[in-house]
Image 1 (cartoon, rainbow, N blue to C red):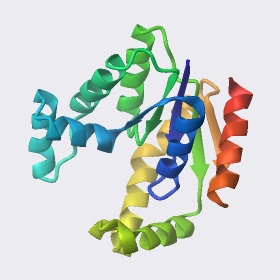
Image 2 (image 1 turned 60 degrees about the vertical axis):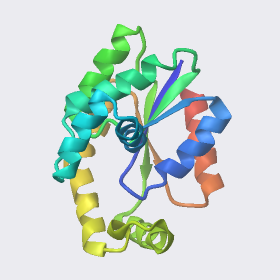
Image 3 (image 1 turned 135 degrees about the vertical axis):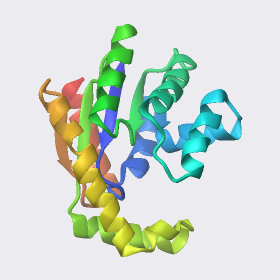
Length: 191
């Protein structure tokens, strides 16, 4: 089973590449944003708890996020694998993910990080902001703060998986197809 973490800062192209990887490999896509929306829209107990925190502008606690992730994985036992997009975001989440997968006799195959310079990310998100409708995509100071938070809190996950030889960095600059070809070559080299 192919279990990938697609990794990189906001605007690095994870969502675009995840869609192409899902199609090619038949993977289940797990995005924390999608999980939150689904659970909240369906009024599940976890969704209601998450909404309490989100409505106050607070981060959703790891145990709620992990619970949602477990539900999604358990509801899809027939998949060829999973692509985790935007998760894990903290070392505690990475450790919880590894424990959960181990209970199912599974593990992360690889963490593939898209390496994109900060200035390129800022320009990509500002361009996306012209059509996304997200106010945070139009404010350069917010974008730079999101990059800072990623570097402080999320980037250490790369080293966590590197300790077990599972982290791979690829260049995330180029056309969508060029980056996709780099990704598929990397995936096929580790499978």
